[in-house]
Every structure is written in structure tokens, then in C-alpha cells.
Image (tube, rainbow, N blue to C red; front, side):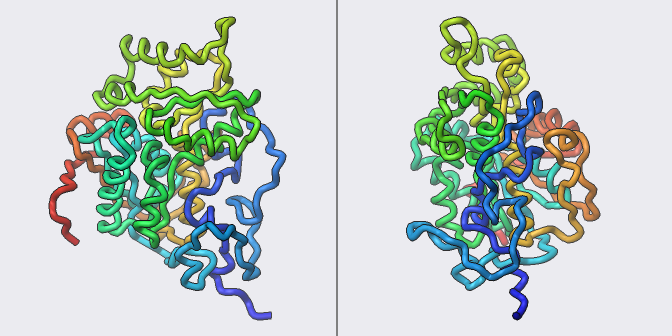
Length: 381
């Protein structure tokens, strides 16, 4: 029997190709559950899920009639987005402001050899209080910029944009793999909870979209989910107010409805459904105490991106994936070795000096300098 083409040998399901598979290849990919072991899931991994053995037989991936076919499948290649080995093109990430820097940090740990372009739309933050049509329009504008810059994959490092604009961006740029952060976060929360009682702290737009509720229910149908809109925290974070009495008071007011009549918590896991919120994770954890696990999607999304890059053979020249980036034990301390120096660009539509200062605190480096980006300016190749 003839050997199947190499791209077919990497065949994955439609969901894995498009970047929205439930990334559960390893407990290491789960963030926020470090204080307790992750529970074993009863459902087996899909044959094509990340971490599962992949067959080299050229089988077609089953799909529902309503699911759009992947770009590669339409071209006759089941397993890849026009695969390229030693692909030096950058990975694009964007957020409504500085919150996506938490995702960028995890991407650098997982994929230290990859070049990145980050765009934070601080001039129009927050997205969470805006109409869906505006969020989609802003997201398309930034995605267009990243594609024009040659991005080989895009991470929507914003929960609101992931919930509202993900499908619109995939339709607009069907040849570029695009990954959101909602599903990785939902999977992480479903694996972290012991009791099935999960709280979600997100922006108003994300809560109204129902994206987290649906994603968590898909992972754990019996879960009891309580969502709290917390858009008012975003301006405080954007202004650099990451630890203050005013912030503590705002957090306490937002968490109060999650308390039981006895004074305890009705939840045992709180999912940070906005990428800004990991920047104030210490303050949130302080308000919750030790009985509630705090989960954010950054590390899980980075793990999903690593799988997407591997499956589609988009690795940068000489790159090594984050074998040391174990979010459970080593990932936050020991980035993987990299043989090629990548380029790392950070842009903001807002105050570049303020973003540079925050990046210095977050990455503990004075070498990162944010540049101002005018999205209305003419594009140059």
C-alpha cells in the first residue's frame, strides 16, 4: 500500500485545525489548578485531539453537514493550512488593550523561537461595553493589519473579541488559522472544579454573548455556572492600577453575589474570562481566599497555539517547542531552549510609554519598547 502524504499523516479534526479544539492534551496545560490535582475526565480523547496518537491512514475527518470545510480540506489536503516547514513568519496576537500581554507572555514561554506581533487597542478599550458590531469591526481592522504584516496564525488574546468576532474573522481570513481564548479557558475551568460550581468573571459583552456558558456546558454538562460582568475593572488595569484599596473594593463588590447565605462561596473555581484580569490575579485571589481556585486561559491558549503550529507545520526555523513550558510545574520558570533569535514587536493604539512601563513590570525586562500604531494610516508592504 502506498504511503500517505505527510500532510495527510498529520490529519486532525476540523476543530483542531481551526484552533478551537478543547486543549486537554495534558494536565500541564491547565492554569489555575496548581493547588489541587486535575480530575480525570471520563470521556476518552478524540483520536485527533492534541496528545492523542495520530494515524497515518488517509481517512476523512467526520463532520456535520453544517460545519464549514477547512481551507486545507478544500484544497485536497486534510491535515494542514498550506503547511510550510521552517516558516519564519510571525504569529499575530491582539487584544482590546494590555490584557493580552498575559497571553503573549505564555506564548513566549511555550514557543520561544517564534516571532510575534502584538497589537493592543488601548485607544478604544474597553471592548466589553461596546456593541457587537463595533467589536467585530475593530477586530477585523486589527486582523487585517496582522495579515498584511504576514502573520501565519492569529491569537485573539481578548475574551470579548473571541466570543463575538472569532467566526467573522475566520470567514474574512480563511487561509489563516485563528485561535480564540474562550474554549481553552472553559476547558481549564471544567478540569479544575471539584464540585462543578464555576464562577466566570468577564466583561459585559462576553457575559451577554453566552460564549463561556456554552463552552463550559459542552465540557461539563452538569456544571453550575454563575457569571459576573466586571467591565469596570478594565479601565483601572489599563491605567496601571494593579494593587490598590480602590481596586480591592471594586473586586469585593463584584464577588459579593457569589457568596452563599452562610458567608462562604457558592463556587469552588473562578474563571478569569478577560485577559486583563490575570494582571490583578493576586488581588482577586486575596479577595477569594484559599477555598476557590482561580483559573485563567493564557497558558491553555498558548498550549493550543503550540499544537496548532505543530499540526500545521508552521514552526519557525530552528525553533524548539516549549518542552520545559509545563504550566503545572516548570512553565513559569524555565522557557524552552531556542536556537534562533525571534523578533518581538509590541504595538498599541494608545499611550506607548504606559504600555512599555507595564510590559517592563510584566516581563521583568527593560528591553521591550511598545510602539504607537495608527490603524487609520496607509498600509505599506
